Image 1 (tube, rainbow, N blue to C red):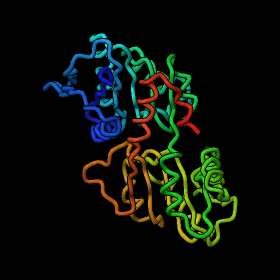
Image 2 (cartoon, one colour):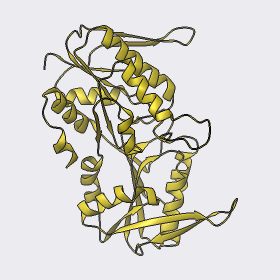
Image 3 (cartoon, rainbow, N blue to C red):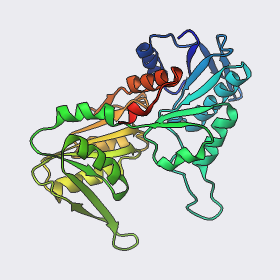
Image 4 (cartoon, rainbow, N blue to C red):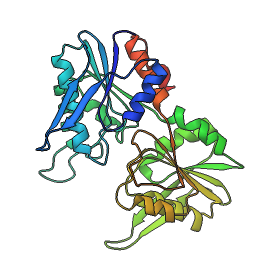
Length: 313
């Protein structure tokens, strides 16, 4: 793998190093600093002419815009250095929730981000659990949207006791929850939330049987934590669940999320390390699982020009 290069910015260097450890290669040195006026500076510290280069850079908080621009600058630097192929490995794809027009004169930000990444020089995208699968269609290049299922299943099996139930926190996540329930041979339930009228509180209804059961609440991301914590509360108070464990691919954890999780009825919250825990954010209920081996395997398949399909089974 002499012509395989892994470069990274400042958003999640620990994940990039872990991917290199699985691949048995060294992280290519990259200079990523900021000028005094706030402009970003990027410089690749090794020859990449003709090489297969993978840029590991989630566009995640606490500074989504900075991380996105840094990703684009690295891709552009590699393109101008005559890299053979440039693959953007974006474990968390920022702006994914803005995937359509929700009001007049509003942008489709997820599409604009896709254009920025490809124009900068990326010829392929590798990510995991996109908030909306149709974002793959925003790119005019191959996109590998990996699933978190292979990483999450083993910890879930270990945590399963008695008669577990897989629960989707809303109607939009039913397909994801069904996939887990099928693999774990567990029943499925749904939290149905709705407002009876404007400015009234949400009414939670539990579709499915959770009374006395160990509940696994599944979602793709947790931002402020409101929806997940309210769903967990409804499962315990209305559905009379025995306990609730939450699992999500991306722990955005903005605003009051940490405090909400701390004060919630949740026993444990499991995230992938697509977004690194931020300094000062600590909660004994939160656990992170490394996704480095899955990305390393995807990179290996792409580099060797073999099928990536086995990773989706």
